[in-house]
Amino acid sequence: MRERTEKLTIQAFRAVDHREHVIRYIVEHHRVLEDIGVTSALKMDYGWCMDPRTVVVVALHEELGMVGGCRLEFAHAHRKLPIYQHLRPLEPELDTKLGDLVGAHGAELAGLWVAHRFSGNGIPWYLTAAAVSVLDRIEVGDVLCFAAEYTRKYAMQNGFEALTTIGDGGRVDFPIPGISSYALVNRNAGSLAKAMATEKDRLLSLRREPEQVRLESTYERPLEVTYRLHMDRKMTPLIPLHANLQAPGMLRRRSA
Image (cartoon, rainbow, N blue to C red; front, side, top):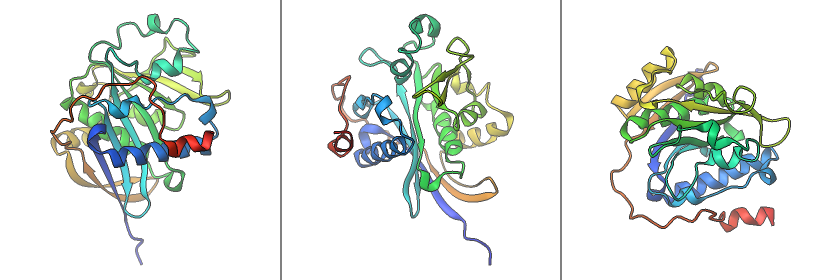
């Protein structure tokens, strides 16, 4: 008997429009960081939750719930992008090294995580492609990314390249010694100029049809993936940003 094809939904939305998904995203992401033992080394800033420009992309499994996510954060006067927070202790001349990359329309692909209960199924690949595909509908210039070892290749396939002015050709020891992370940049991300030819078909297809079903296959395990990337056009009124918004009580209790 042929094995049943599992179903997954990749959904994009503005953080301020779907609070229940945002809370689940935070809880699941925190759980992944706990599992790999790096929560004490990270100072998490949840101000992005209240920024109407933040776009969140999540992976929803038909039985296992939310199993992955990432987000697009945008530069503005109130808050620095996450990459600044992470890299500044390692790179004293960070502003000089980043130069004019983060201007008025700079952004960052941040917070990419995959639940261990559904790892090894290419979820970072689909999430990254979905996030890059929505960039042409958003006013954005260069996009930064601070990628973990296991997600770097997916970002590079979708148009990111090493930010060689940082660390050792883009590589730094973060968040703890023995774990590497990579500073990447996607210049003029909307053009798809640096995306691999094999990835452009998916990216262009998702741009043309943000609502579609695809049979995706990674590591010879097929998944029926429903993409829901046509974000609601409604905009929630601007809520004042707080640079050091604390995590919800459900997260604080573990570190108390």
